[in-house]
Image (cartoon, rainbow, N blue to C red):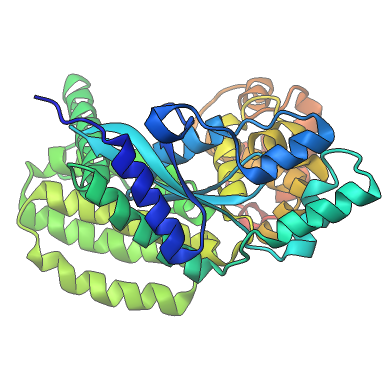
Length: 429
């Protein structure tokens, strides 16, 4: 018999969290809708209601809350995100019979000061009268301004609260989801190798390893995970799943992953400290599955250090924008497209992107596209006009112009030398 989702108990837990922490907490259902007593759909937060009263603008946070809950299961059980008004929220799903039945959501809070938020966010939404502006300032001052460190602690506490409402360990469930997905991908890739005749036995996928390190230094979590699974698949296939050989290769990978993270800008002392602990842990594993899960957690943590997200004022917006570009760079993507995805105005998004990434949006996108084109030029004989299209440029001449600006040579010359030129390793932002 399935367990019931006790909405009254969940609402009481949200109220207790709010009383204990001073941070607003509410309940959403599996569709991201805010729930009130008896499971009825509740109205939006006070802040949104007042802004709607002044401007007539409908502000729907449902998709943002649903997005947060979905991503919580992909990132360890809890997740921090922004609503359409760029207010920070954090969430933990509630699991009943292994199914997400709802989520506890903490917030809104601010990670930037109140005056900065008001000038950058509120005034862009609509023309407000002087009296309306003063009223909005009073309301904004009631939203807590907290540090990233406190936000992390609040998220942990909310997970503990949500865990009491669930019949399944949330963190364990999130890890199992990642592990199951990884094992399925590795098995699928091994099957692919067998059907294709596989690589030469005892060979090592060195080119894939180089690409993996490049993706880590760029902070491409999704691409790095896919490639890591393929490397592990080839390793298992070529070694006959000899555990000791696999363990020694994984040990080498840990060292290489840490170097890639440092190349991407991660803190050297933090990485070396983690490495010391990781190298002590490896001998405790007795199964390939646990070794793979452990290696994935290391890789994800190293990639997070590339961006040092705790120091980023708009961490979620920057993370989402970078992931969106990594997935859509082959398309006609604009600053407006991406800013809409992260619920920020184009001007403000452009500003914080430059501040946090130390490169303009346009130059980052061009650098990403040219970086992808290098691999195509080095490893394929696809015509230049096709490569331009494959990396998001409609005009081959413009592609060639940007390529030469960033590398110092034309795409044709780069291909002739297969990337073996000094300037090909330089990046111009």
